[in-house]
Image (cartoon, rainbow, N blue to C red; front, side):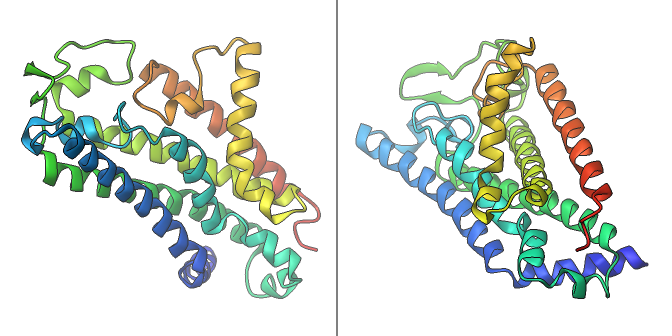
Length: 273
């Protein structure tokens, strides 16, 4: 019951935050811009829509020609961290933290905010990807269809070194939905890390760049410690060579880091100041 009080309070707080709606706007805008670029490219090539690649191969996470990978890797984590990652930092900065915790349980409130930062980031990114796919599907259709490049179906050979390539060949629609989930899960967990790290930084702006800093650090450290196949940046680009096993190991590592940070934050003596 008490935890429900923290949840209700923070959901109301979330819905009042302009950062939530700004983040949704940015994610949808990038996905919409990608669709516009795909259509513009089709028109530039002088091809009819039914002669172009189908929606699955135009999809923002799988399109090698109209590639917005940099935005997914850099802008998405920053935009999603805006949603809720700085809430406890702001309470502390504005000296409202002691007043807040006369009404709410301190550690339960932190846990609820941590969970919301992950869940909301996951939902926003997933809806953005599905919005992109739905528009592309309406325009280009679906399936391993004929393209203007060749008279045979597109990419009918499966390569096990590419992420879930067998699923792409068997069912392109399920493939797109699946990679939307895998990338959104990763973005959600990165947002959770951003929230937890907010307890250790003095500057608000740093909170939003924590996911990017984390991605860069892991790219530098993992090869040194022998984790050559684990790359979170590659996992944010499913049109890459890594396996489902690599993805699972990466998520386990991420969850271990998160659990360690959460334990430290909940045990901090100065959580309530």
